[in-house]
Image 1 (cartoon, helix red, strand yellow):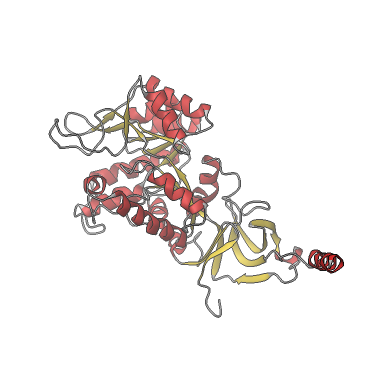
Image 2 (cartoon, one colour):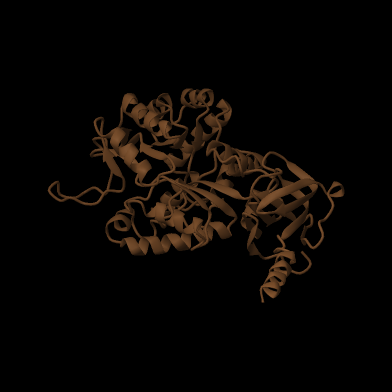
Length: 424
């Protein structure tokens, strides 16, 4: 009996182990995060890009699955959304106040589950989410569920509650004696270190601070924190290895945030040539959120192409031109959630419309965002990096709208979406 058991054990040990699936993609055209390449062969193994180079120089491994993308397609690194709110949905459906005050936490999380899948299906394999907007740390929970494989979605970098100055944020308009939940966590000079550390401890991947907001005498945007207060937040976050990003729409709010050491500026409507030159010198990346601005104005009745250009958009276009002239790095992040999740590509289209070259926009949505978010394992088609890939029909270097026509999405080497038809 013992001899029989030993023979059975030896037989089991001699059996081959599970075969690790390999995928070979031959692409007539591929954007590698920096430039367009042609006749590329890419081999995926163990969730990573094992080999990449000219098709003629790389042999096809035995028993590999093969995918061929002819010149009707373009292969790209998985796209990276730089400014999202997974716990928001368009204000044309429900106002921001009602999302924060009326919708239950369960409803908001259920919506977020749908939202992240829509962005993934659109080719966005990573997203930086900039605040739960009144849902506490629900974004941390959604991130955990994705990481555990419970739900599909992009890799998430989350901010948690975000930090605002006392009295500056909403919801507003209620009697002073009525306390209502806020869209972010208030803190001031004496609390900034504690609140920053607490948000980190509860799962924030980075800290978001509102360097200004609409709390002026007439509801206009005004700076909220001093440079020293902002610097306290930045230094506290940096000691834990985390970045600080700033919502800043005014010239002075932007200047203070840059001086304090933030890594990115969100919105930046009040950017001037001098401020953008300062950003370029300091290596601060701008996320202009063009799509959010145009969407909000459309909800208020503006009809693009029919009505005169609103002043806010005119100012945004001047700021965008100034940033390009100054050589400021511009990242791709549209504030999706203000508009429909899965429509992330709208920001890329508007970046081209406002004057950026399509290849630069593709770079912004891949390598630039990866570098700014310290994601050295993605954003490019390089050997050893994660196999986060998307294939689209058409050539987005000629027509950026081609990124909307997604044929293939691969995340960590796993097929997420494959709509390559017969003959493709």
